[in-house]
Length: 325
Length: 292
Image 1 (cartoon, each protein chain N blue to C red):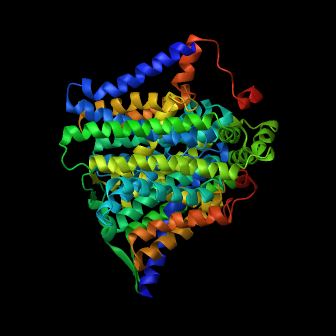
Image 2 (image 1 turned 60 degrees about the horizontal axis):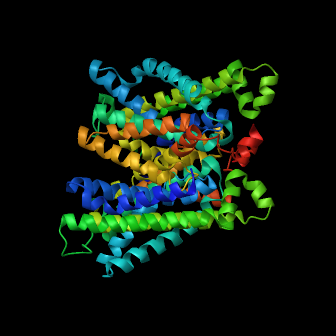
Image 3 (image 1 turned 180 degrees about the vertical axis):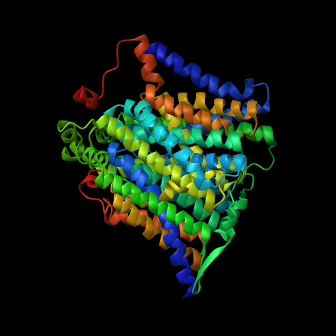
């Protein structure tokens, strides 16, 4: 694709996103749009760690839940207004992630995934167990940030808030992908030992990527808390939210800026469709799982590279694939 | 003091089940360096099959084993040959986790659709009685569960140590290329290794159905616990997993009777992180675990 048509496509996409709340016919589609943007933002944040370094975290819903609860608690217990609550909670979560990261990134591959799953279970247990602070399994009510807006206007506001967050995360990803730091992270993905021996400070790079990706996921969680205003620990700390981030990123393509967004545009509406068409059954879980299995088996590089291979010459293989082949 | 003894005894009994399930996980990891996240999901699938057989015919959960064990063995071979073996070798650890994670979601979703998300349980008349030893009361269903788990583990160890297949399996775990050089069909053995691993989930499922009520989403809690066990024990070490399972089972019970349920479960993760910080290869894992 030539550069001019690429920019035109980008501009059209941005215009469509900005106009979406004005052109949808009903409130439900607006709600679904906000939800899709939220998932896109979390998936792109996940991809800061997963895409660059190749470390697959199945437990990023821990940061989503902590960001949501942190925002809610700062507003209800400390009486802060919503913007400082949102940012303060995200910063605390990022600091926490950096601390966890020091232990978590010591292990590679399979052990890292185990740690990430354990992290969700731990945070879920803590939040449900600490009844006096968090309200335990009954959940937490969060005051409205915009008390004079009705439900539709609130969806409207949060559509743009989530869109802004998505833009911020994508810009961050883009900056990293063009920086020396990004090159270092990619070197970790291709061969961590070689990267280390070439002088890449692998531990520091991995921990910062982990914390950065947690920061943005926590911001998304905080916005979710302000938007939904009622937090259910079982949902915000669910494995499903974490696995959606992974599924969306993999489906779209983890090595591409627009991969997670594309994945979110497919998976989130499909999930909503299952909920509407089939009611509150568990079929959507099975469908998400099946999709994940199919992607892993047949399209581990994602849609974007697969489609690119169809329209143009074959993609360049990564260093490791060339070395293996 | 009585409370502690009671906790200790119950912990050992629960630890038996943990050990059985963790040994299955260690097998998968040993033969293919795969962390099988779907293991607890298959455990719950077995529990639900047991439940169906029990409600349809009044069968004792343990009599479901002749049906579920061969079925799960075949399923395990199929999962390995048809799914895991197809993954590209260069990124196998990550991709296999995602693959089995997808399988776990599929199983949970199907169980939730067929059986709904509410609690199910199988209760036998002996489950309500218990054996009194001094001041300690041991429910009969726990004793039966422990006995079944211990017998299965003993059979598993006998197969691994004495039989020709067991030797081939261990050779494959230790050095795949060398095993192939001496004429072991490593692909086939790897498939059977998965079958045996999943068969332990079938046994575990019957035991689980016997001792506790269950619902589909509960398998996530088991993943966390079992993963902590195999990391503390050392990835790939069947013996290490069994020892760590009993140890963590006892610690869980002791914390349960002295503090509360939240901290009892939390102990698994505390030990997981302590192990990763102090000794990432686990406490019983050898050369194999160090590479991961």
